[in-house]
Length: 373
Image (tube, rainbow, N blue to C red; front, side, top):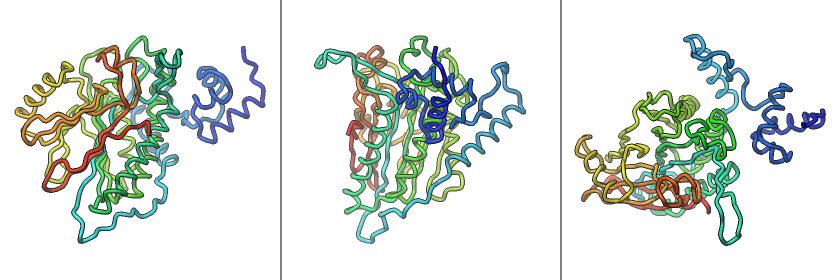
């Protein structure tokens, strides 16, 4: 039983006011996440999460008035805590001698909130390959890689526009698989607000080099609100609300636009090219041939597209579907993910696609960004 002295409570309060997560506070104070969470709740300490956002436990169903109130509170929370900072003008002024190209960044299978541990034969012990600190470092590495590639290519091309395509499973969730209790650092509600905080900062930072950013997000299978596998409405997904919060944040921005489809599959047009987006859990089988066959069928029955984007398989590769149709299978953020090994029999490598297009070609430059740096 921990004796909560005033000094300890003051320390937690100071960490909260500094913006540290519950996990970081627990690590610094050499305690568990649950101990910190209970202390904050029992002693009514000031938290970075607005208590008005937490609905009473006795309410099993939301009433109409509750939903309106919750929406209002969320809007106020976003406005008060995530205001856009003044961003320096991007170093990408138009040059008459340069050709215009558009950048495209695929992001999928981030699994915020995951703690992944595997046995390392070289060290002869269990090692951690993913947690919140590793996620933050990988996000920094991704940002720096985009800066570096932009700086390299901007000498020859005008790179003023960036499209960020989120392909689902940004959140790990904590309630869809019974065994997940051993694989998470925090509950899904806090995972969602981490996604708000970290990625809004990421988007703002990218405005240093891009004049315009378009963000499009489709949901994955880990964001669902129930453990049942039936196809629930898109609006029930925690990821849908993550994207909608981003959309609310940037609704008055002239430089960032957020698109949130109410469908699991979506075609986003970039220049003159059609980009089909989905998470990929509807694609059955793991072989390249099986995947290519299903994408061809989708191409024939959807009215056509030029590039197909999906995640889910935690493996990065490019497949030529037809003469002018490309499939971009995106990787994950977790190195040697246990879940991917159990389901797909392959260990994941944390890599994400970053590529470009022009008026003449749907794909010009192409990089597999290694998030480990």
